Amino acid sequence: MTKKILIIGAGLGGLTAAGCLLKAGFDVEVYEQAPKLAEVGAGIQMSANAMHVLNHLGIGDKISSQSVRPAAYVFRLHDTGEIVDTFSLSEEHLKMHKAPYNQAHRADLHRFLSECVEGLKENCIRLNKKVIQFKETAREATVLFEDGTNASGDILVGADGVKSIIRDQMFGAIPATYTGDSAWRITVPREDLPENFMDHVMSVWMGPGKHAVTYWIKGGELLNFVGCVETPVAPDESWTAKFSWDKLQSDFNGWHPDIQRIINLADKDECYRWALYNRPVVQQWSTDRVTILGDAAHSTLPYLAQGAAMAIEDGAVLARALLQSGSIPDGLELYQQNRYERTKKVVETSNMNRRIFHLNSAAEIREHFSNRNEGDDRNGWLYSYNPLTVDLV
Image (cartoon, rainbow, N blue to C red; front, side, top):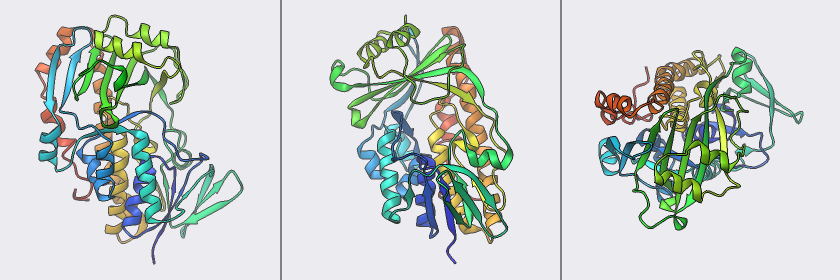
């Protein structure tokens, strides 16, 4: 009998899981608390490890058509722009890993994923469904919603983000610790910038107590800027909090003229800043019929550009693990044991990058990169992972 799987959350991870599970022959229902499907944020990076899954779902070409494939990953000093390290992406990444490195708008990826899921099963995504709690028996898992309704299935998947209700009910509330950083995000249209402003590369600008990331999205029509700054007072953890443009400008005073130009051209009413919180990676992900994925299991700071990629990988591995196993508990255990160490390493590497990117002097930054080949490291374990073919053991 086809197993029925309930997914809580229609973000990137939940929709990817839904698509992979539907393609694998499972019956899926997705429940989302928001009244409409939408994605906040701006830029997103998808290396080969994520693109394998998007290609599998049939949306790889669509997202590629709306993306930029950066020529290189470039690490720069914040004030002079001096390049202290670089490694190739674009054609080399595609040749090495058999899938591209794309930079796109999150809203485009979210739209393509939701269209994919609805194409595989009409009315699969149910909106205005806020979860209160779930119940689990030996035969099924039932989720209860705020509107008084409920739904039951063979498996329940919590893809409901960093504040996951499913995770907290399973294992108790996971405390969040403020990292001391907040991240600005703005975009600037190409038409507002000088001709040939910034190459099509992924740039990390590093300086004392803060760093910035710049790259093109929307086929090169929009420049994405993310600026992570050490902020002593812990604000609310919100993607949609707006702050003063004057504060943004003062945070990057003295930085390279290109950074100044981007900030000066930003829409002064559209300057967003969100607080970055740490949560430990959950070691136990599953019960016999309930599991979690994405940020619910391993929220990742944006210092390695892999948070969304890990959620995308989760969805593909979950589908494979359930197909490969003789029972639901065995399948969820196989999924968990094949995802824990990898996602933990990504979280820890992201945390380490935060320290490196915020070193106090150019000499310290140069010394770090002189002792490490960033490209070889990432190509060796991060980008080379294919969630569709990796052995599940």
